[in-house]
Length: 239
Image 1 (spheres, helix red, strand yellow):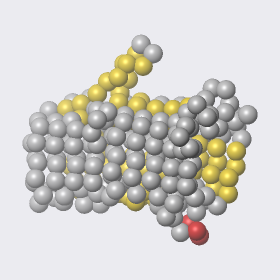
Image 2 (cartoon, one colour):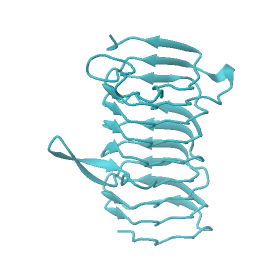
Image 3 (cartoon, helix red, strand yellow):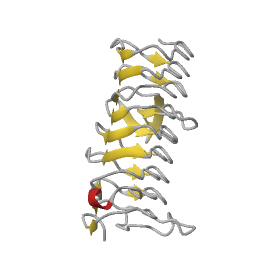
Image 4 (tube, helix red, strand yellow):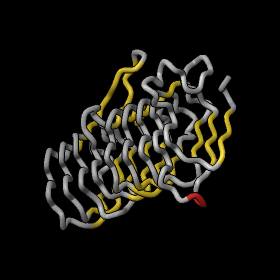
């Protein structure tokens, strides 16, 4: 276990963080303001990560998350979740190329909201099934997003809103059967025209085959409000 605030304000602590494979818990603000930290890889053995654990941390190296923050019950089963549903773990942290997988099945509300210095590729892999409200809202320097892990089913309100510099387009796979309003609001809005890609939508907003279900996109805020793409292809399960 790494306790609450264990390395808080250790701004000159540099180099990669190597965690033992038996580590189970990282406390709140454990590495808060660790602005010189290098590569971070959180092992699958981790079952608890406190709020703001890595806020204001890192110096531009990669972040790999295979462990989870806690458990949540879905359909009577306990599954691994990332985030506590109230606070961002990685707010204002400076990681480049982020991979999420391992034991994580749900990425909870606000998990990386305001991760404005997260950059490069966000690769959601493993068996992640749900990406909750505002999970990656205002991650404004991400340049690539991969959702094709074969398991993602639900993308909630504003999950990727204001990811405004993503290049190369967006692919929403057939596995997705629920999407809420503003899920991709202002997506790629600031991407240079020559780096824009295609939007390919094969998943749906509901289990009836709708894309942009009006019951889920109220108040004039559709899925792709103010998003920018070079071309759009709609198919798959959309009817």
